[in-house]
Amino acid sequence: MTEILSDGGSVSIYMAHGGTNFGTWAGANVVDGTLAPTVTSYDSDAPIAEDGRLTAKFHAVREVLGARREVASVDPTFLPPTEVSLAQVAGTLATARALAGEPVFAGALLSFDDAGLPGALGLYEADVHTSEEDWILTVTRIADRGSVYLDGIHVGDVDGGGTLAISTRPGAHRLSILVENIGRVNYGPMIGAAKGLLGPVLVDRRQVQRWDLREVRIEEADAVALASVSHERPDRSGLATTTLTVETPADAHMRIPGARRALVWVNDLFLGRLDERGPQRTLYVPAPAFRAGLNTVAVWDLVGHPNTIVLSPEAELGPPEEYIETF
Image 1 (tube, rainbow, N blue to C red):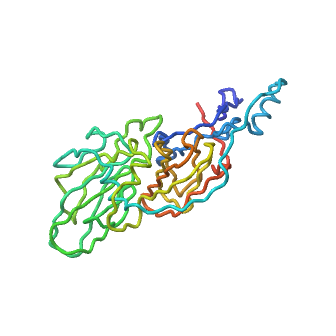
Image 2: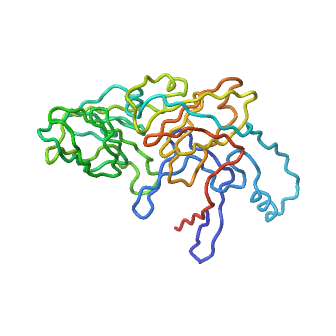
Image 3: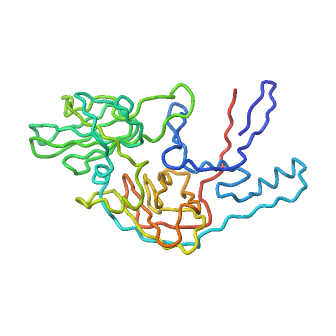
């Protein structure tokens, strides 16, 4: 990054070595009032790349610094380019219920934080009653995104809040809202901001009561356990798995064509998240994540249905961007 000094000059400070925010540890920033989640691969166009390769920038920095001694470095080895098909295992709601912990009950809504659930996914469920066939479901405030189900059927998504027009039989129904925390703020005045359902949920103008909230324990999951999640009714999104035979473990960059909001595991390592908005298109898989022989990969796309994974020696992290921080 480039720091602007008080006398008008500047000094450039670079991250030396790229890295990975495995799992959901990437966090987020706030840009012009909008939450901006940090990508999993924290490469930052560093002189030493995420996978350990010395880049052209590394040698240029050495040249500027006058370094003359030869650098002894071993480039990483990569698995050969491979494309493998994914097999659908279960829908999103079935997967969430399979990974959910013990419920926390509340008459009114609780945030993740008030319920003592720190994770990235939470499943809210309640019974709703309606005497009408057509009605409006309103989620007044959610941090950050939610997939809404009625009697196990997906009826829509909300981002920050929103309304959904519902058509169904009168009577009792089970409402399920899978809420995704897309990242905790890393620094600034919004550190500690609450996540989850933060405002009333309304059936027309009536507030839904008597909720139970369960943490969806994705950090504790692994690909082999996910492959055994039981099938449920088809869903427009969900969990898919595949197996991959590796002769000698080596590094790889994994791309998932068609992924929209995907969580990815390789064996017992939770790699991280991919979002269709980018800019990141691949997840770095270090060699120790693989085993000699059979390996299991699991992809849970919360809103999509990718069909393949592609392994490549090359990362796709989007165009370099300059970050300027002023003090």
